Length: 110
Image (cartoon, helix red, strand yellow):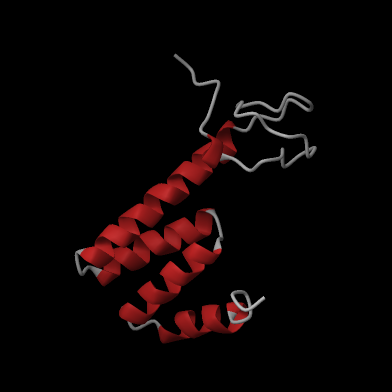
């Protein structure tokens, strides 16, 4: 059975195409944009974030970096930036970590 509804947290509050308020449907009621691919990207982002955190708990910095990088590639959030920067530090990729720090050092102060 195809899904026609999604979890509230899977999508933004407004349609990225027309700005209409979303009501958990996989298709915008106003412009008919298919929101299924966006929902899938967000779910994959969460899965990679979770796997990266689990890798950290297991002491596997290499696996943490791989999944943090994949999560950040799918969806760039403050949380994905922090996780990827930490993973970069733990794996000795200092230029990546300092690059994220330099680009985002004022984000938490604002």
